[in-house]
Length: 258
Image (cartoon, rainbow, N blue to C red; front, side, top):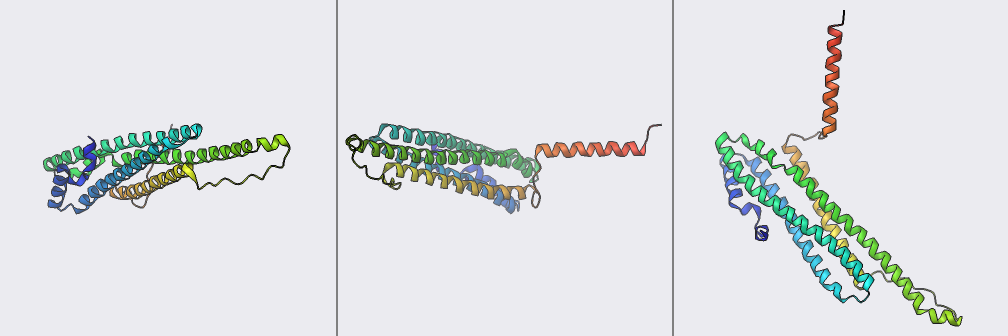
């Protein structure tokens, strides 16, 4: 299964057949749509691979940390993000396999019913919903990284304060003057390296969220939504209810009770 992630979607036989069919039938716009979808999925897959590789590298360095509480906190933060990223990687694999299967069925349906069947097959793929799910997952990872940065910063401050007090216990007992506490160097040590990695993680997630929004806008245009907001389910129900009330009111005026 993992091997399939290394091959760009457009290189699969089903996708090549679909591109060939669309091109042969003068459906250049539709071909462009499918190409953009496959490039987006491959982009997300590639960024996830980068993220997992970086997290694995950081995790391997945590064994060198001497402070047990700091080490435990770092392992917990990095481990949870890594677990979430692995789960997301499996989601992307599922999206890839689903897209490959969809491409094969789309060619079959278009050959059987004509090229007009493409629009229906595109809706069946539920690509907007897939993007929404991925976007939410990356946003969750970004928030986890953000909280992790703050948490590690607080731990660093606490350890710095504890070290200051411990180093001056002897002076306190002798009643001698205690030197002023120096500010913690926040850009030093493994703690800073992990925080920097978490900042980078947030940056990766932000890029994917921005890319997703761009593709979502294009998908909306493909589906005829250019220039207008997409109505929610609640808005559709309210509109139908309002329409029904207006129709009943009009009928009552035209045919008053006697």
